[in-house]
Image (cartoon, rainbow, N blue to C red; front, side):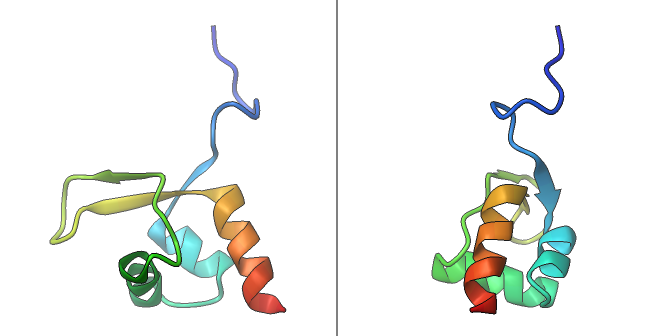
Length: 68
């Protein structure tokens, strides 16, 4: 039984999508993760530091904070 769109399942987005939402580069998103400003929802294997995915609502909240 699928529960697409329910609040219990986070909407996961890529680093590229997070960068677009934050109006910044993917490199800056990576730096934000290193600094602890942005926490990935999960990290998959691949690439030098793994591939991060983010919770869309957390990225949108951070984007609103940065816009102030």
